[in-house]
Length: 158
Image 1: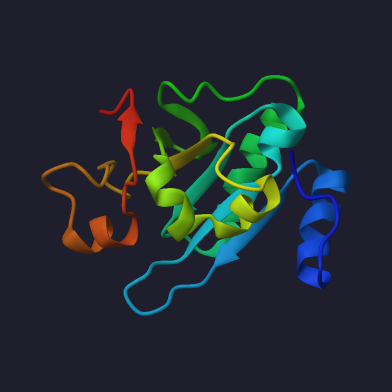
Image 2: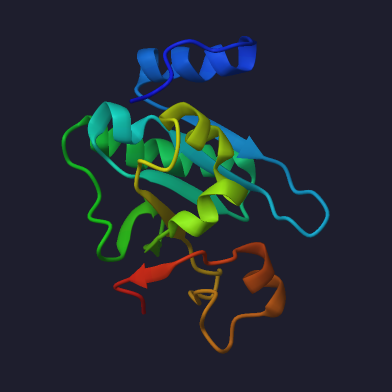
């Protein structure tokens, strides 16, 4: 069950975008110690695909990455979230981490609003540094780790 009517223009835009494009992208600006991130709403409803969240990149870049994943789901060839993929970034592989429900309230409140709760799967796209290191690598810088908090267990992590 999902929302079908918004109470204001921003809520209605989410519903309208999902109806027209199959999904909507929410961009959250960095504030204080919280990093910038973006997430999808509607992929699960429209395509039966988990929603996606990505941290630490400019909203335009995040939207482009999320759009690649959304287009794959729309085409009936969704990304395999159980293993790394090189389909999202040129010359780099990304991993996926299943996000636990305990993180939903803090990070994807708008998706919870749309789905009337936590009844949708959510995966984080985890991208490597320019040197190819993931945030959990012992040589990853503290700045890189802070820019991309990993919310769950990485599937097929390297």
